[in-house]
Image (cartoon, rainbow, N blue to C red; front, side, top):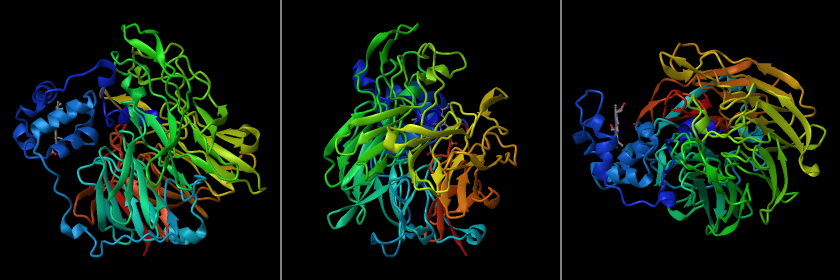
Length: 609
Ligand code: HEC
């Protein structure tokens, strides 16, 4: 997943080596001369001149560097350098917001806790990504007849990767600009917006606080926020990890007034640079009280503090142990008072016991009760990816087989409880929660690889588990590395009882020979009774019959839309989050400008006419 994120996400987070090197406040003008002037002082019709940039707000320029068009150019810049150059170039003050017509006439937000909902990464904290019939209210025939009802566009963004949360008629959704929105599910009109400090790609969790509710989310700077659902006002925010590369991609799971937050990082991708001292980040779960943000516990996936382990061939210090980040929402088991997470790989050698593993933590204390490692010895970082291995690439590097998605807790038709985890290796693992994670069955659904196997998540309806395959492959075309239009993708249904294949469907090759098109299905999967939804990097949202995998519905999201909020709108590659289904409507993000995938900035809402 980090590759999923790695190659790409590395352009988003804050970069600040200050804590390691010590740093003076940078000069915005100096940064501009060094990093921007070559293009923006040159008069080319494709490049806005500096005088044009001077008309933008500093906030907007920062956003363009953090999550917009200048992402790949700005990624080597530390956070304070970005802030300095944005302040040097731009105007002070807030960005002009959406037009008045984008707002609802009635801007009141009412959370009906009795209403059907999908209020976090999954409708419940067992992370099945399954919406039962009563809440989905969508028959197979109705799936066939789904029509686009509205499109909402994220202004100036090139990716749409925050899965919406829906409670009755109420939507909450984040965005790459860091703007979090409360929207009306029927029409997509805006009730309020809240500006976070960094891109928000987590799904949003909703929990009661006093007589009102909190919307809870994390940003790509590892800050976690509680905003009042009814008003959009900040209740509290808290940095959950001090590491400069730490970030939050997985939504918090919430139980009994405590939010359990998974912490990951993009340090693995930082290690492309031979001068980067790799690596010091360790994954963790942080438990915070919903009402005030007070920390209940924090547990690192690696208990040992990183220390120097020598020097690389480039003379840069090496640190270990590191890695084992958490990309997915934790799974809560109230009966056993446990919380389950699945971890990523190590970034530097020696590898540790809890990487690429499923961990069970005590819900009350955070103590690790057991760990089941799927792949041992997996130390890997992006220093290994530049064609020629860089000095940070570990000797005996591992295969980079993270778990990127959440553990699913589910009962088989025979009533046996299982924990399911899909891995980038292409394997799906079923574990026994009563026997310290003993393996019940394991089945291969994909070839696996650095951006292969199961990426963002599977779904299970209690009969089968549905696993989509990424298996994306890069090829070089006209000296540019692009996604191979003939590799990756496919969807497999495995019987919960024994892991045998109920069916599997081959991917659909890209219809158009468009650069960056890929059949890879790395986005999270969603199930309702009778149908399973899976988005593809080729921009298509498809629904398959749970009986035999035949396609019931297929919509190509790569096109222009007239957005309800009056913003220029286009769909793109589908990756990251999956569809959210509530009360006969299907909400889905489109646009994922990573790995050369097609950019896009929309949230689409489908309904039966
Ligand atoms: C390699 C050339 C290049 C470099 C270097 C470069 N830019 Fe750009 N920049 C562009 C181009 C081309 C565009 C237009 C992108 C588009 O709209 O497709 C652009 C667009 C922008 C925009 C968006 C303007 C708008 O319409 O909203 C901002 C802001 C910006 N650049 C800031 C910067 C900053 C700050 C730096 C230095 C850190 C920088 N750029 C470095 C080529 C460059």
